[in-house]
Image 1 (tube, rainbow, N blue to C red):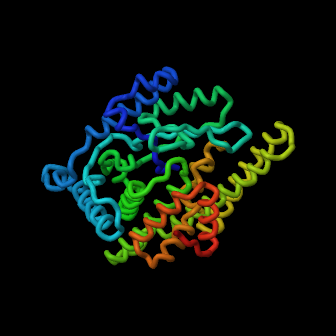
Image 2: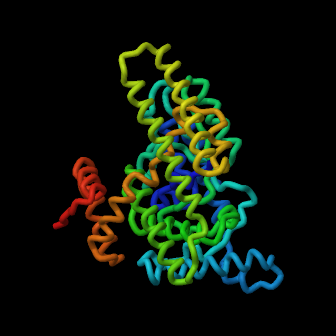
Image 3: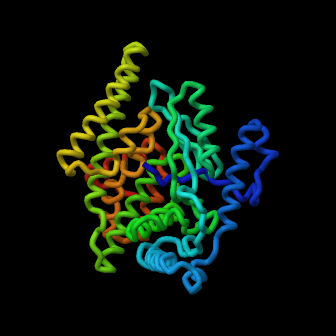
Length: 363
């Protein structure tokens, strides 16, 4: 299952398009190599960009490509005109990356813990993964971490945001999606440009997911379109909750006084329970069809559970916040910024209050 996650970006104020070798060398050669592939991948991506308007206007280009890009620009215009999102050159450019994913993210945890191995970067803050522009590099890193006894998961990512530091293009990997998902992804990524809180992934992704969902609802209403994936969205929510329930039980198991051997046995039992509960839900409620079979039937470990919940945890809180300001986008973004300025404990308490239907006042 691919996840669209923000990858660490290079601080162009320091680097100006090339790796800051003099700075990164202080952390060792492996760090220089990692940042080097990030810089190289980003530069190659930027070099592949071309104006969408030129592609659409070129009769020699693939008609299907031109049609999809033309629709993307309608969504891009809607994002700024109706949702109050940044009006810049992001998603007015196109890049053919000639691969299914733009990056591969590597997640890792200890064998008997759900605490992620975190990495801290300029601008993006600390995140629970490392991004690689090639599958080979990601798999090499995964192998290295596995040799240390860690649980490891590699997930492909089809789109990401540089938070406005560069003009992000529409990627060829994004055009494999349906029209609705393409439009909503543009809303999601531009929301990250509007506001981003370093170090709080759940806050950032839940906020952007709310903008994506509400923006998508308004986009469909304006174009008199039906939701093209209501069943898929319902399946995704229920499947996510199934995984979160598993993660909660594992958290309790790992915190218990049981022996390591007992914890390992309990861990495997929980994964078997996840498979069983999923199959039962799929066959009972969805006629035996759901898009998560490959994920569930593949190898399961702690790291594979990490991405779940990041996009959903605080969405009800942001929906409540939006309702409090009467659906006014500028007022909503101002409240989001004030929420983000709160200390962590106060921010979480405010989000919990909003999620429970309470009112939060802002000075």
